[in-house]
Image 1 (cartoon, rainbow, N blue to C red):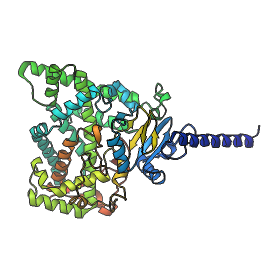
Image 2: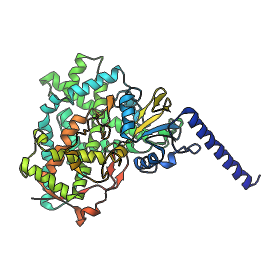
Image 3: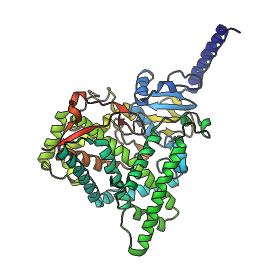
Image 4: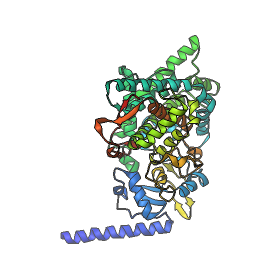
Length: 493
């Protein structure tokens, strides 16, 4: 048999396969989408910026489309109207999670409120989070901790101001976010830059974020699960193991303290008391896994949002001056900002809202999965499908946002649109019963940090880079980070 015959045979097989795919799509009433290739499906279309690739495809195939990513049928939602259908009208049907294989390390998905199915265990853990960590009263009670950590961030920047050295804004914000959470939970810093053990913890959390953000072949081809070809689950098992060992030691230390001289009334104390009073609702394992959730979910998202906000300020000096003018008028230039001041700083809050519109921390939110066939707007989403809500695309939808790619905080001054999950044009924290529980903390922490940096210093880009030349490229991962870290020099007023 000659090569021509083999080639023609392969071409015929490919054409036949794709024809069957189209017929199958039509018979199942799947949402429209690009024709998949054999074996890999549409994986080749994702590239290294999947949020952008899927945004382009949605312009051709519509606000709800289906793709085959390896073996996984994936439905992508790319408009506020379709997001409302999925996250509100059919919220329960779409409330399960598509669990990345990396989260099988130490069976984290079986204990984590992020990944558990909506059932009694999830409800009790979610209630614990909302009542004991993110309630208004609890956040009011520990706002002095956040103020102290922000003061330390400003002190760090002041040293650089005196030497004329640039600040790696994302790294500094990451360290601040970690310490803020560790004080909230354990009443101690876990990331003193001068301590080897604390540096190890910071690196551990960073490594977890890196591994979780890598594209994993096992997620597209579950048959490879036992092989773990990229070693992501294996490395994640090591990282999780080290963090859980640290938490185990901190819990033991606290239990000893409680026996001898009482507790500290921080998050760990509240959770341990709950565990003693309601052991069927939350036990020690759930406490340690909840702490792991809080650190992984609450550090990278906060630090990347702050970095993007400062990048937009430096890219748009007129917006920075306007924000600083408001701060000077309301607070007084150079003075410390308190959380109670934030309601009197509308433009600063608009700056944060506009940052979250253009740079949502998690571009696809957390992937969902349907356990049964669901019909949405006349299309069938088949059982077992992964569902991605492209919050990045929705926030840049030119049909909704005038001059959508421009950074214009002013657009929110007269707008009723909110980011708490009620308005589907702006859903950086998700919506429905699976909305991010940390939203109330984020809405206090991010504007406090941004406002403090802007009210304490003027800022310029390192190396004489002009605002128009600032690179705003994105790097896709579990969070949407700046491809090139923001390095800026603090200057005294």
